[in-house]
Image (cartoon, rainbow, N blue to C red; front, side, top):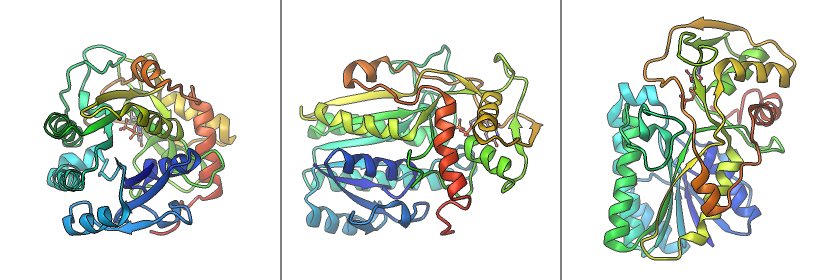
Length: 330
Ligand code: UDP
């Protein structure tokens, strides 16, 4: 299948492009490189440098490429920034995505795969999170993703668009061969920051809160390997043939892992000490988030290859030890 990957030069998108190639599909990348990296796109994959909200550029690309399916990863993803600069998030994650969806509709593309988030649930009343639970985001980032989920539902009804929205938990790790990995600027995610601190390339890791109602007082999250995430996006293709098909899936391993457990895993994998400072809670962090993923396992036969934190950190370490400055293009 010819797949247009919006945000294909970013962290999750670039891993998905490689998985698409491995599965025999033809990915084409759309990215504006505001956060993506040219070096993350494999040689031989066609690349269109354009903004998601540029309708005439999208027209040109859709005409030229004859796309069968669109995967959409091109979004801003910093929860904290979304609180201080909400319009940046609404303009890109919502308004520009509507422009993309309009192009999808005008060009008769009938299949869409969307990268959503567990942040659409807000603070859950019970855990683990199941797809049917209420969605009440507590920050603009989560709200923008929910807005797009709702637009997709409406388009499935009005236009017969078939779509899947994957609600990610904490994407982590890197390609097993160490060729591509996580490189955000600024970096705010726990695993790259812990590894960078252990390497001496970043300041001591600040642990955000030690007084949570969790077994060791630090937040628990569900870390899921980026290649496992990517595989689900491809496994769903077979379920998008029916016009108007509507799928929502949680993607996580179901295992809660605390900040302290992540630090211990980084120390075991790297053989280095992670310098740590214990600090205040970060605003907007729920104490614990982890998935019930039985739906995606039952319907798509998805089974994460990486079931625990240590092998996930091992892949991240392969990438960061080989490329301590990431792609080096910033
Ligand atoms: N975290 C931390 N120090 C950091 C970055 C993150 O203690 O410098 C914690 C954060 O409070 C959360 C977990 O690590 O409980 C994962 O945070 P991250 O930003 O990686 O992902 P998020 O859960 O916000 O999507």
